[in-house]
Length: 274
Ligand SMILES: [Zn+2]
Figure: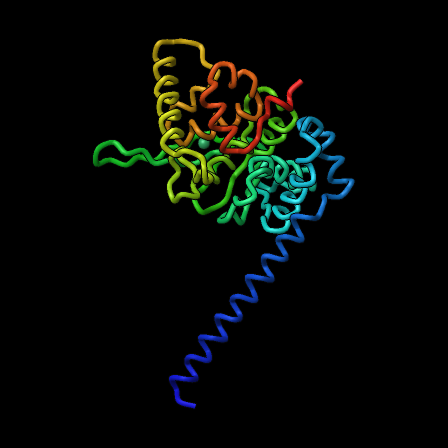
């Protein structure tokens, strides 16, 4: 055999190996997605995540399958000597899974690690003032790093799970950022599915974002947390929290946003209320 033929054979073997690996990986994911959580794990959901009881029956096996996939793929790391327990893993996995429960073509592709602090933590941010770049510490309940980990305060994550209607949920917030980044930019314009009009999405989000800023500067009361006015990416994450936690108010006060999020998440949480 000539060196050229040997090279072609090696390339062919590599391609065949890659295809076999991909098929194996796909089958493994399919198997995980069909695996329900255990009774003990379900008992944690029933006790500490009241929304679980309200979810439509048809969503529960799907949610549990995504949780199994998540728990298999994502590593949990405790910061500041925080102990990662089964309760921590289950409640974070369940809330992360809810966002993609009806989006079969979406996964947290680049997420490998969830870092959990016992409570709010300090994070350094850079501020640019002309040629001067300064650094200061801010308190955080969560962070989502682009192509990197999600960082969560357990105190806030547990509170968010246990209080499903207060409009605040750091796990939904940070995992919404993870979905947002799938276009390559974290800008409040996530990947939309076929048939979802991007121009309409962009227009609705811009109009409502500007309206929130106007309402805040005029001192008007808003349903949407003022933090949503700091950037389009935060607007998307904050609306995600309200979409799942105060859907009736969001639908009645911001019907066009509700409609866009209903199309995006392929879910209608208003129906779960009551
Ligand atoms: Zn955020």
